[in-house]
Image 1 (cartoon, rainbow, N blue to C red):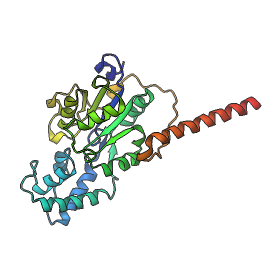
Image 2: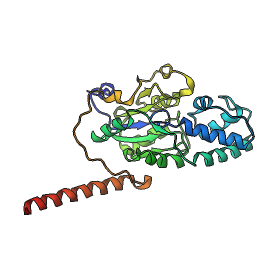
Image 3: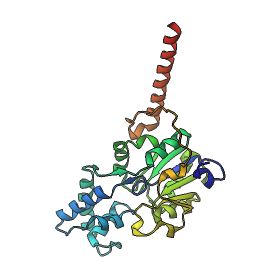
Image 4: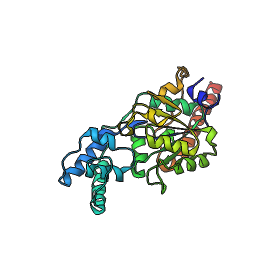
Length: 272
């Protein structure tokens, strides 16, 4: 039995929702590069990657304010300057994500969930314009049916609005759903939505141990949720070329293509 089933009274979840930064990917190096570029253009001293790691989690506007203020509060920053700095940051971050890496165990866990027929969604405070291209660049996009960025809805985490929206779209109840993240915002959003929450200990969470937020479970690798469930059986891998706007239709086309290949092989063998 997987630890998913242990959390949901012997049943697999119908829907699993994931955070992105600090949960599935380590994006700190590229975010820090964008912050340093922004500060340099504004004639400010560099922030340092460790400070940026502490400041991540509440969306790009707050990250920029914290970088300008040089502290977690982000207070005392002029609104006009913050808007100008945000534009510089967004342009710099849009330039590439070469240093962003997928955490160990993530691909295996997503593949296992997909194989079990579990629906998956991504809910992040990262600006929407970056999310789908980044997922596809890292070959993770095909796993997620729904993607919610920090500016997709009027509210962002810790508000539960995005979780409730996705559950409604998936036709899943709180008892059939789960959220996996790494920060206080993730745990608070999950609790407010009434869903079970699993937290990753390696995430950012502003430098604080995630255990302080009392999630339902804390793990150090996503594969801990499926320990003992992986097998060596071969599986067909769907194509990775899906565009974010037609994710479902591309999967359907891919499956239809495989069925045509199988039928063609069957006809060939019969004739032979």
